[in-house]
Length: 227
Ligand SMILES: Nc1ncnc2c1ncn2[C@@H]1O[C@H](COP(=O)(O)OP(=O)(O)OP(=O)(O)O)[C@@H](O)[C@H]1O
Ligand SMILES: [Mg+2]
Image 1 (tube, helix red, strand yellow):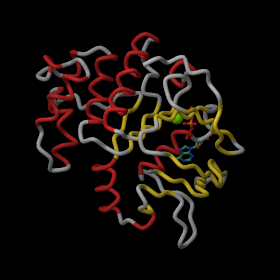
Image 2: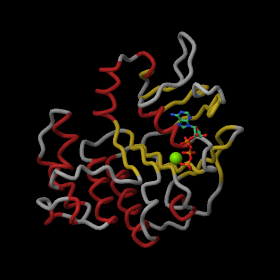
Image 3: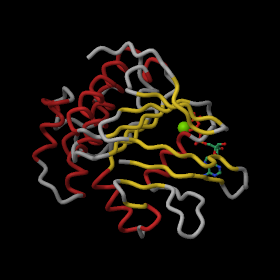
Image 4: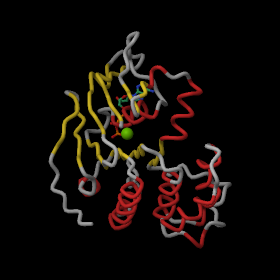
């Protein structure tokens, strides 16, 4: 569902951050990406999200989403693809403070012109059913991340991108948040890519990739997660 073909990125300063990465991510897979700080994990997610552009010569298509080369899309088309087909979860939540929880979760539906009834169902699914009228400042960090997960998944995106989603949470809360994320992506058949520094978090995914200066490769982490 997501194909990387010789993906490279260097910033204006010249030093290459990513060089010639290739990988196929499949629908329904929950994949973690680990690697040293500064190796380019967030850069990789931003490129996949279309928030940053890869180095590419004419005719190159280093990122292909559902058979569609991202490089062939203009800004509007890329925005539509991102809105309709992707969901995002970040360490710092990015929940909008002036909207209620229900309004936060309904946002991707509104932006895609979809009926908003599913927002309440999704809040229910993440255990915040009775709190739709609350505002984000009334929540704990773990609860905030539940809202972020509900918002990332409410429009049933094919691809979920998460950058250290449990980086600010204690281990028990992190575990319950990742169980929830896993359950929801398995229920919708999405592909999810999660960057993490935590072995415990990586253990809850189907597959762990190690990003290093030499490229990307699968690594073995004993999977202790039991459904
Ligand atoms: N906009 C930018 N301009 C120039 N250099 C950048 C920019 N964004 C990132 N970099 C550089 O690219 C490299 C990779 O950064 P990135 O944020 O992707 O790392 P990371 O693997 O996510 O690290 P961490 O685990 O600390 O979050 C770093 O050396 C960083 O300084
Ligand atoms: Mg990062």
